[in-house]
Image (tube, rainbow, N blue to C red; front, side):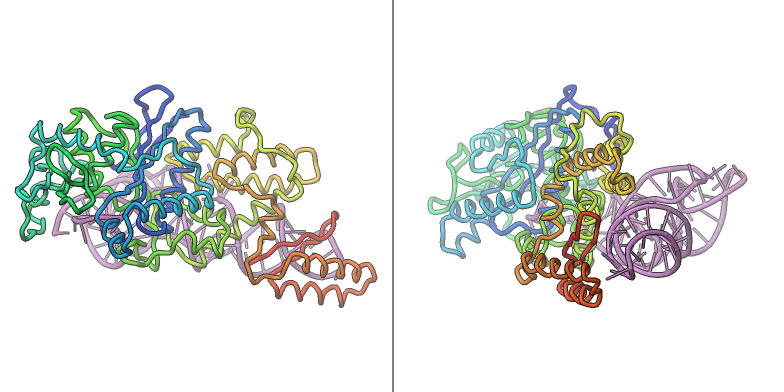
Length: 464
RNA sequence: GGCGCGAUAGCAAAGCGGUUAUGCUCUGGAUUGCAAAUCCAGCUAGCCCGGUUCGACUCCGGGUCGCGCCUCCA
């Protein structure tokens, strides 16, 4: 079964062909660390987490690299506002980012390079670009990339270089030869944050770090480059220009971009200020609910962030978890034992088709229906272990069903009180005092507790 | 203006040139002391106008509307 991936470069789904058999080099643009991560970041993190988990499950040897941008104008400005060293700011937000990732069940990438740890690589690449005449030092000390020298500029996003020139904003006081040129190295005085380089003291521009770090971690030519929806232009276009000019070979073979998270129909972004941070959302919703929401649509589709969608995601996950109740002891099936399982085969086929998590999820629900029908019989356990295996590929089912279904927010009724009332109701039922039993049930329902009687006793869960 | 993406039932969201997507909601049935959960059955679809085809939600053309990028942003 072959893997197909939609590539921004070709604008269509392509059959994936690795550079080396069985191996995948994957570079994803990470986060600029000067603020808390928001749900848009979570989208990219979860998407590539699921993608890398799935690829590994299919025996691909994945080398997953996701960088951290820890030097940049915004970082410097924010640090100045806070009157603190920029390194204090970045290390703090890197820590927060790791906390958020852990909370969301994001597995760490194989490498997490930081721009400031690759200054030498960055300088070396800029030197090469200057030597090849693809870059020049301007009168203000900055080093710029000479866009006119790269004939294929615009090939990722179908931009016409001439029209970019016509539409480019004319910057006053610009030292650029051409308004399309972009900074590789920004001049820094002795008091400013900076590093010494043959072309003078300064700090790297935004785009060059990814070219340098991906080369250091994966080589000049690698398989897949990914990132968020706002990166194709100019960032990835510029990366291509830098890397292909400096290295003299193709850069990434496939380009993957996640869809935007929207809020009221508008893209959520730091610059618009309309974002919800991951940690704020996790105060109200279980991390797996957030994961479920993010994988319940295709990674390339825009997704709307709303309270209603989170509630719906919770309802869907409740159904999955409810099916697992009573089978806590059954382990997830090893994937090697599932090759004949029709549900798993469909699941894998969906994921091999450009990572169609929504269809894969539909397969899991088909499995749930089969499982619910089979409960009590001998056929149930294999279905449970298959379902658990698929859920784990999505980073779900990290909880015991009861603890997920009964997980409480701060102002919810305590589990002990629920249990006590259930005991009272059970006694009332035994006494045939159904009026009292129903009264207790209504009381609990008003507190968000739903009761489910079963031969093994009364189960409960929280709703809403 | 340029480039690109999308328009599916009450809501969310997929595949597919002819045969049930799926989840939530809703209706009926089974089950239950009554419920809930579960199972079974069912109701709500494919922006508009043309074309291709025996047949189009699915392909092609033209509209309309929405969104993203074209400046830092995942």
